[in-house]
Image 1 (cartoon, rainbow, N blue to C red):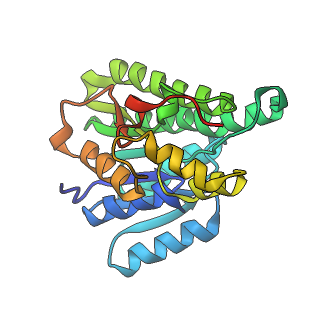
Image 2: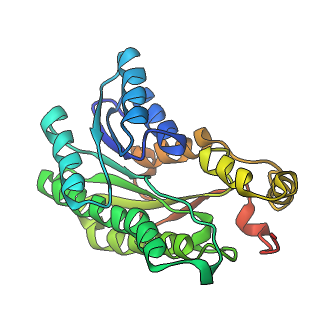
Length: 260
């Protein structure tokens, strides 16, 4: 899977799945715009990649801010001359009973998870259409887009919206060579998983539950998600668009909604 001379933006690249995606695309030859709201993580990844001789530039980005979304696209064009790939990965998790969820809670999750994807797509697609050379956009959705649990309302709504937006954009821009797909991770061993365990009253039972309800019998890794994303960026996936692709170890085929 060769991405030599391609230019990719990865949002939320300073940790977890975003970090793994940026590393993988860089290893395949792409120049990376490391779009991250937290400078520490963004700078650390950029230094790691450039230390390996790769091309990488950190751009502090709050994906919910329109000016930041426009700036990260412009950074790719100014620094590397073009844009080929956008990975909309930045997002926040949510686990709280619905009747305790405030409007401010709702707006925070939606603004980052869904508004952020809209803004990224809005400015990236404008650039790709102007270039006239096609491109690939991958939106990181979730298994919660199709099968969810109590206490996740804003998160599930945002991820369902991402998957629906993906299909609509794929239909609208497919004739211009722009492919838009969603990748839906399941239970992945990242910081978000660690935070969920820390908040659980019984971490061992929680871990056992998800392992028992996953066909693979284990958690996934960020690198496994990155492998799917990398493939979607290449010409090997040239006839794949509008898809909602699951990297979940079979979780959605077994999800029982019995988690306490």
